[in-house]
Length: 261
Image: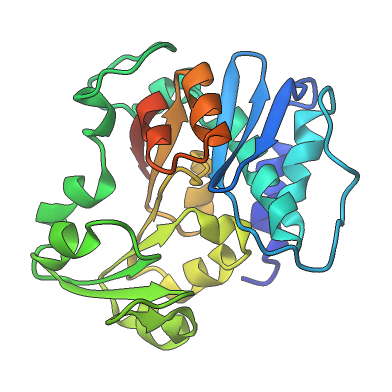
């Protein structure tokens, strides 16, 4: 990719400059950015990096300006930037328009515990990846049981657990795969453009997790599927983030899945 920033600029420029930040929170595990009734979340990456690179975030600022923080090398700032992108792109209305909830037509409000996880990518793709070479970037819970039981699975991880490959192995291993599932935090840590480039045209790529920006623009850069998260219970998401409850966040919204057409 000749200009890796092009992906970020496309997403940032697509945010309506009239939207304002009404609330934000940088939690221990997740962060959130709200604009009126809409909430975007992203995983909090704790590395401070080179110090603050953008003006201090504040309520009332342009959502587009906060989204620009996704380009920061200070990963705390970048986490908020990605949450701001998701506040704009991961709304019920936008995902409904994209068919991202399948046959469900959702509205904001309390979640249906059965329906909210039905589009979990690692379950939805089990039949498709059976017998295939699959790489997962990021060690997701239960991934060995969900995907490893049916495929030739390898896991690439920045902090490898036993059996994982270090993430630097991506240069060598990704081009050999049939499918690659990439955590949405690759947008935050700036590895997404290169990972998409390594996958090329012959590796099917799914960007997955609550940090995933559900913008179809990512298909132009090589993604084939976006499996992210849409907050429908704003109060519930805020409470989970302030309490630093890692998995309670998922009770505040629905998983969604959008494929390239």
